[in-house]
Image (cartoon, rainbow, N blue to C red; front, side, top):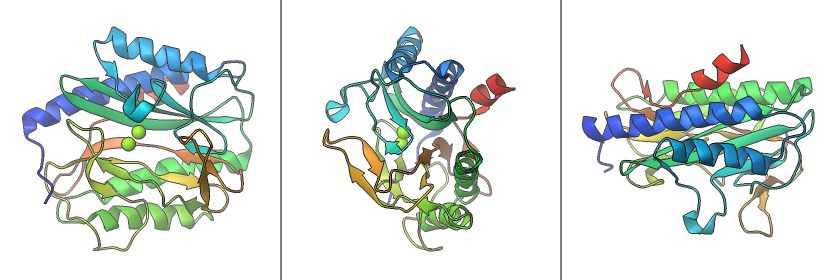
Length: 256
Ligand code: MG
Ligand code: MG
């Protein structure tokens, strides 16, 4: 049994979620052709520290940066680098905060300039599949209901689900039980209860679902080197309807 969070804990997780959401937007404002992913990492780290928090990914199991910076065929866990983003790339920022003893964790895949229509569709479908998952994150359901909602939506567009990585509970630890897979059968998996805080994070490939680990032991690439997208939000499981803690509103307001 996963212990639900108290309302006091949920408020601290909400503070982290808002900070991580604003950090993603600060990064997003600067995503453009000609910018390096190392520069975007610095923007995020500065913003997190200026707000009195710690970038929780830095040093986590030896991870060398404040954010995961994953470009094109990198699904997750890319290192920020001197790589210069170019028109038509996609760039995923996955960002974690640690503040007042709790964690924040969210991710967004940004288009760099104009992307081709198939890539635009991959981003739209991956984000929409996350919201399908959130709709299933209600008390009484199981993690498999979330996975099924994400999978059936994304696969209906011909995209494929990365199965080696999954969402998770969030609290004092960055990764808590239960695991939240992006595929599954309705009615299977861990039961969801009121007050559980989870990160739902579809990782979806334009091509086949195969992935491999780079020699640096971190970056996860698509086996066919086609693009992958990753969107992540933190929600509280509630009766009837999940409550979103993190949000893409700060990003999408910038894009208007
Ligand atoms: Mg994350
Ligand atoms: Mg996560």
